[in-house]
Image 1: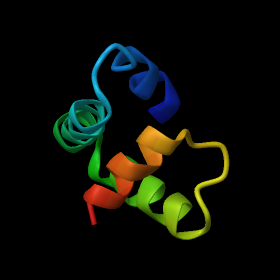
Image 2 (image 1 turned 60 degrees about the vertical axis):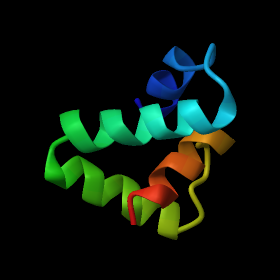
Image 3 (image 1 turned 90 degrees about the vertical axis):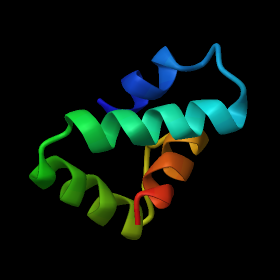
Length: 60
């Protein structure tokens, strides 16, 4: 799901897209989902696009 959100913001410049992805996750994801993606990133973030990884890392 995170990569789908990231794809939605592909038209934006890098920094703006990363911020938009992070904002979306922060605003609309359940706390358990946010915890899960942070754990996934900590374990290497396999399968996440670079922009999504950057967005998730900015949530720490």
